[in-house]
Image (tube, rainbow, N blue to C red):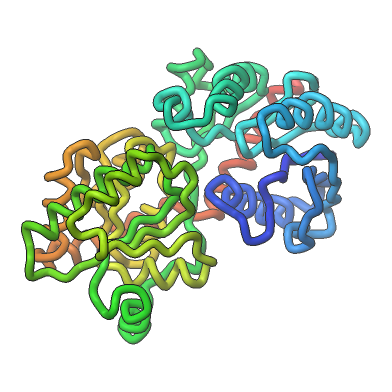
Length: 379
């Protein structure tokens, strides 16, 4: 088969959630299936590291799709044209963007519908594009894959899609995440927090990540425990650093104890995660929540939210808190700090649970979804 793939998010040194999903699944799929020819469609110059095997042909098609108006041009004009030119038998789009202008059978990966639930957190033009096109893409796609049972249910509810058309393909975690030595933990703490323990948050710094309540909760934790010198390390780019987030930070009593690292390369991220006292990931909305699983692999306890997909992914291997309850988040920090047995228990549960989430499994599940689509297309 001649299989075209939207690979516009494979960008050197800029892989984020969906980019990593694309990278990890395609790397395995193309090497596991040399009998097929894959066409990776980029919207700009590509790095050779993303051409994973000899059965991959890279194609660059403009314009660079990084703006809602350019999305329309790329997916509705450029993509149909190139699919016809290469005589594609199927199209895989791992970033939830499809094309309404092609008849080529499409497997669409929709990671979450956060824009339907919290549209106020997204710039107006991008919000319009998501809300106008995503439902149409979902209905047009021959088959849909998504990353949690929660997201599957949400797609069914929001768009009236037949659940039989949707497959769940859980995310994995990068294999580099693993417990680090005590000496390395000491080294990282000296670099980041003058040797003090720290909680870590990992993710793009936007409103749905709930940084306002995280800052408030950390303040409550420190105020209630004046002898504790634990810091808060925040890893990620200021994607939508709103006035609410900024003001919440500026009003903190202990804002000097918050360390912002910005985006970290993979090796540094593994080290910073592995040296943390716990991950505090109290997002309001997630389709999956990859940092939860990465923390299981890194061997640290997890505090996460009772909302959306997070209880599904965390299972019994995390402390679950109401993300809107500041005191509850602070109390979870206290439990991790003072109840060593609880912390060790959570680490052990995470160690057992992490095997559910591997990129090998994800790639196999995505390929199974693709095969179902092809089978349905032949009927």
